[in-house]
Image (cartoon, rainbow over all chains, first blue to last red):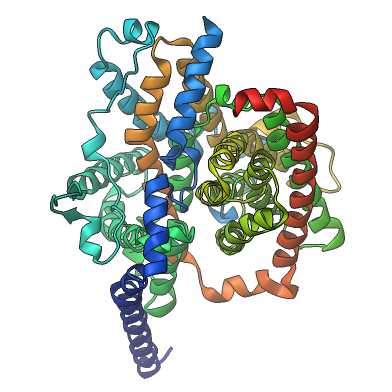
Length: 82
Length: 484
């Protein structure tokens, strides 16, 4: 690619990177914190917190809500072994 | 997963390395060694600091909580609501304890960076190049985890895999990925090592958590849906990529992103295929976790049946719990337990897919069925590490006094977080190596979407039928005693 064309592509790439970075800053720095403070959303977040549920957990070991269930299971297993 | 990086171009038998050479240089074997080193470190730390009288305490029924001494050195950015700084440090306030995840993040950086640099060097590759790029890839992964840990993002099941891909994609599709970063982005190596660590969480004794009804819902329906969806993709939709067909079928029928990662590695799917399967799964999960509880409430379904249905159909574990809790405590317990039993199916799925792939898919259509040696040669060896980790930790869990307490501390305080970092690094690496244009042919004709919709519809019907039969009719009394 000729040098002038390459410089144009590089310049456009940097502009796009800047635009994406700006978008991330606006969404995560402004919009999502604002959304988290809205009464309905805040209530949902508090409820999830109280239930010890992380909806983004990928595996059962990442879920705090599993702990009482696993504790119960463990006790039952030990009783069965006795 | 990328055929170019792996063993799909099989050399003739005379050119093949010996097993010993393979064990010293092949990525799959090194994933096993690295995974094993991390598991041994994690277990030794817990074993050496566990109470001396652990067996006695457990024998008298005392509740014992073991904390790994490594815990404070292994962290992820914490959940934050208003300021991303809270993901790393927040001072103690009246009603909230303070957090400081910086030492834990640095600890992970040092451990993974050193381990992979040494492994790269021992495999005869340029460890210096790896070390030059690793801090940047790690920094991008930290940024991804920070984006993923915003509380609203978490509440909608938008998992870190999505943001890690996005961060990588932004760089590769704007300024392009610099050469020095590529050396620190061994995607498959990160994924396979992460999967070996995940193997330790696949505890076989938990399979019977809900007795026979749970096994029927999670282990009978799931394989039927997986195989039917795969066949539908091949015979009806005539999908060109068998690996994409398999990854979508597995993530939809088993348990979302984690199943997609394991299956993609087992059938050597392309990176963009894994990305696409995950994006589809996350989009549908976000909808299903809201819609299913609404449908259940509207029809007045009982909680046990509702829990079994949601646990067997919603892809992601966290989303299952959120949907279950919306219906009620009993639904949450059944849903989360069914999903846990499905989580354990990952090992069997990865093993089965790997065997099927090397035996039938990769064989020469005109040639004879490959010999046992040929199958062994082509078999993705990291699966052995995954299964071994599962067997060893299942045995420790079931046979050692205080085994459950020891294993839980190992998983919760160390291997779970190391594994997440490895998958995060892998998804950033995938993004760094993917061009948006490579994703377009995969979407041709909307076949992947159609495959997911048809497969999930079958899943919803079959799971509901099986859950009703097992939980509501055949084993009704047994279920009532397990989930009072």
